[in-house]
Image 1 (cartoon, rainbow, N blue to C red):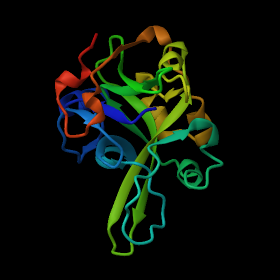
Image 2 (tube, one colour):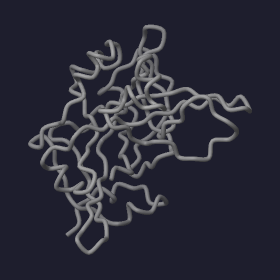
Image 3 (cartoon, rainbow, N blue to C red):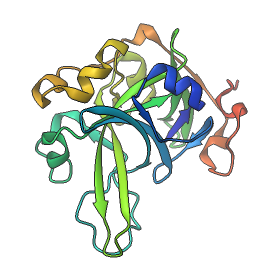
Length: 223
């Protein structure tokens, strides 16, 4: 399961995923969960902009106050056919979420789940493909939200995520602009499984299970 993200500091994110307009403000975080804010880069009126979004897709229209978490992930195979995501996909509402890594929980034979931190080789920050939506509540509150796109797991991720066998769609740097601007048919070709040999993982403390903990020690290896 993919339930937590590690977000880099703002300067690192802006270096990795440039944007013409920067409206976001954030700092490094080590335990970001669904329903919390994440940095995102998207297109707006032909130019890229960097904004904060709610992690957890909230489709429009919204009736009353938003209380549910919303979908934090969407399988790439059902993007177009999904009732909630299809409209966003067809209308090119794609974005990039810059992350420093993410946590994956492995289910042990005994039934408990062990957390692992996953990051990339020689890429301290990397962009994950996502789709976004803008919803307006009955109280006229505007909610902009996103969900990470998931693809089939590589060998490394399948060993850890031994139940879902999925992983986030990690974009190549040279694909960022195309992901944001291309026709949906072309954008779909960018949703590929990242090679195992370019990824690293290690087990971490179960402290990551508790949201009140948000510090660099969370990503340190445990025995």
